[in-house]
Image (cartoon, rainbow over all chains, first blue to last red; front, side, top):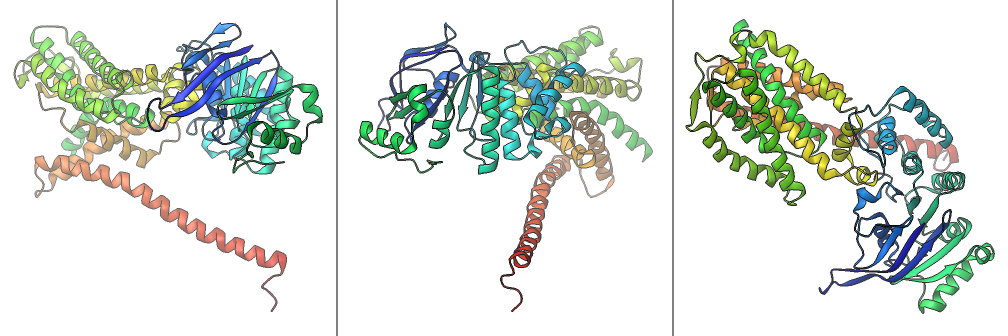
Length: 264
Length: 305
């Protein structure tokens, strides 16, 4: 479904600020894989996400989605395959537009945007049904501006919008990190149910070690632009946080340094 | 007095199309587009030259509108493909248009006295309400289409709408051409109503457009696109009324107009942010005293001694 082959990326090449973001990364996701990604600050997790979504292009290597070579495509061209939820609850929605208008834009993913009405009666029914699945009452506030929602509500809406048209790949970039624990748990639960229901191929970056172990069927660990550990489903079931941190120290030779890391 | 007010309504309606154009760039795209100062004159120039050469006034007006669309497209290309700062793209285009307008006009001023214009057979006061209303409603409708939603989202959250597959370069160019098309249309109609086109007619137009949008929003609010476009129209008329009244004060000169306009815009931009921050502070004080009160009650700490 998703295949990265020998992908490398340098920031500011040749300047004193040169930074290695990704080195020879090989990653292959099968359809329906739910992979969690952990790693220290600057390990290249966000670069990896941006490389897949097309915000950045690899210096070397290629990215394939569903068999299509997409390395040369920019973000909006790849968006037909990719749904994405950002860490910042403000990032995934348009605050001055209503909930139904936001959903209408998500609904147009991968379609030509013409002069058809964005919101029709039948679409509104669909939006209401989909929103009621979130279970937070947004279905009764279709005409509320998204800017009036709380961070948790916005993030739940972002998640729904990202998965609305059943993308081939779902990218979750620490999408619960900016929420308080209760709301983060709600969004995590929603993520789990939506991903398993739609059987989405998912890549989720997280700072929460407990979450990284609990969710998904595979875990990868990154450090200094490399994937240093790849844990499969069977091993992941018995994995503990201590083991995970121990593995990290053993392979990388230093402690997992991340000021935001949450042990769960 | 009544005459000057009727005159104000008439020119307010003619300039309302320009205000709608400025609303699209300034409010929807969040892009202060200075092309307006040039494209307004371009519209007047194209219409005036074609009419004096004997063209049908309606054709001349529509072609003037196309001239504005073209100018907006170029500004959009400079900004998106040339990666030039938005404000600078507009300024560059405005300056370039000054020379182009001079080429179109051939001389600084063309009179349309005695020529057949759109307003030869019908007074602007009768025609313009329908034209403005039709364009306003068409715009409202457009902003509800899939393309219109993408355009609005481009000004609201670029990153988000890109992740849903809209090309923001395209939507920015589209918005700028639509906006400048309306501005040039307004310029063409003004030239026909005042019966002359002048090379300097567009100077300060962007500020007048901003003033109209802001005044209208202060009166009507901008809860939805419907109210926001209505506000631009009403704001344009109110602006002309304010100007007409101000000019009745003997001390003011015609040339003070731009200063008055600039002051109106400055007040309108500064006032809301001052209001907001003082309201925030008041609310903050109120809430923190409430919270402090409940803490004492619930825990019993600090009370009862």
